[in-house]
Image 1 (spheres, rainbow, N blue to C red):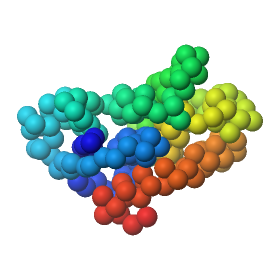
Image 2 (tube, rainbow, N blue to C red):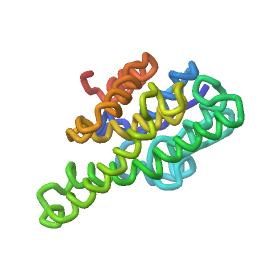
Image 3 (cartoon, one colour):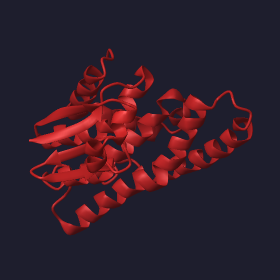
Amino acid sequence: MITLTTYEWVPDFAAPLMRALRVRWALEEAGLPYKVRTLALGPEQRSPGHLARQPFAQAPAIEEDGLTLFESGAIVLHIAERNEDLLPADAAGRARALAWLFAALNSVEPPVQELAVIDLFHAREAWTAERRPQVETFLRDRLALLEAALGERDYLEGRFTIGDLMMTDVLRILGHTDLLDAFPRLKAYKDRCEARPAFRRALAAQLQGFGVAA
């Protein structure tokens, strides 16, 4: 059975956004059982035992049958390789799903994450008055391009894949803003993915693990 290492506690606002949710969601979609090991914030993150699992002292990480794996994208891909519902078996479908997985992590998440860091941790600092509009302008353009690529489809490639799983979890980071209101097709896409039973189970498990009410 897979063992998922995640934090034992985070602030309530962060609980639904921790990257362990991506792993839980993939596991739920794939129908794979797992157990959870919790890690305390602080010195335990740099303990030899945890650094052997996650060399950057972060979470999540997984262990299974002698394999230790870190980085949420790599973990989700590892899980998806067992399930054609997440990763198509045909070469072209697989390649396209992987392209969207990497796009979520490399083209969309960096500006999304930068905006979230400004808003949630530095909103009262003077430098943000200049930097935030720059980030938001760039991000709005990126979201417009993503919505255009989605078009009228329900999912990025017409059917749900790990690309949609990762893209949706990245877009969820914008929950403290109203940015997606300007992109109704993209917002409906996010809502559609979040309505999947596997996502609801994963979110409920994560919130319960952190002791946060759903």
